[in-house]
Length: 309
Image 1 (cartoon, rainbow, N blue to C red):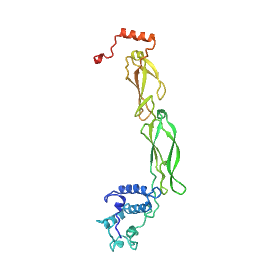
Image 2: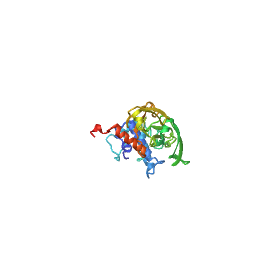
Image 3: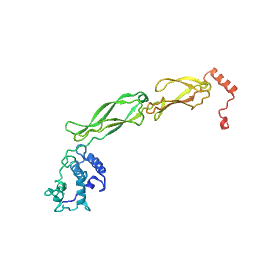
Image 4: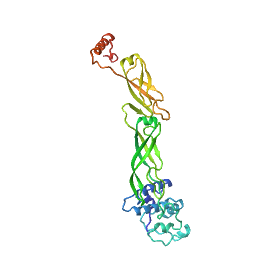
């Protein structure tokens, strides 16, 4: 019979760890399993992978296989030593030359885990998607309905894509980029294994009134020239409700007023920053123009003095 390189079958090095072998097997069998793969040789490929993992995934079998296969390459003629069966536990001979596994390890016994004829079991893959919410949802929490198409097993056990709607609870204080985990809402498992999970990444819908940086929120607040120059108390709408703030006398455009703890109520709470913007009233009436002319004449103000204007 021909020697089979099980390491080559799983695409791992001979010194691979047990965890690396397991990961390689799961990745490949997920790709080629007949329930999910359209590959023309999916069934035979899956049997090869199961056979390889049944040996390399068992410490006793792997040690024996490594001892017998030292220095050999896939496809080379191979025959177990005459005393192999008795030395390793007996019962290995008599199988067809093509059944390499049976000729070597039939006496060891399947463990019902991943043998060539065993039932295939694997937890379903996780699904990653995004959900867009309003800033108010991050402040107060909400429930939103998510509609998507997900793979599910039909009555015949085949995997088909079907529509699905889920009511998702948005917790208060959630931040952009944070993921919500919905256990068991991912891809279905195989062979009775549990389904994967659904992970929803939080995204914020654009809001022209606010800018968000982490848990901190920024808002531009227009103020009149006299409010900025003389100081004033003004009412400002915020995501958590209207607040009264004091504009310090002598404020300029760009000045920031910090409202501690008024940002997104995460852990810790963010802050709300009000960025002042001095807005000039239009000179669109005779009286308004006269006021501007009086200011220009009496105040002798040069805004470019600091730059040499």
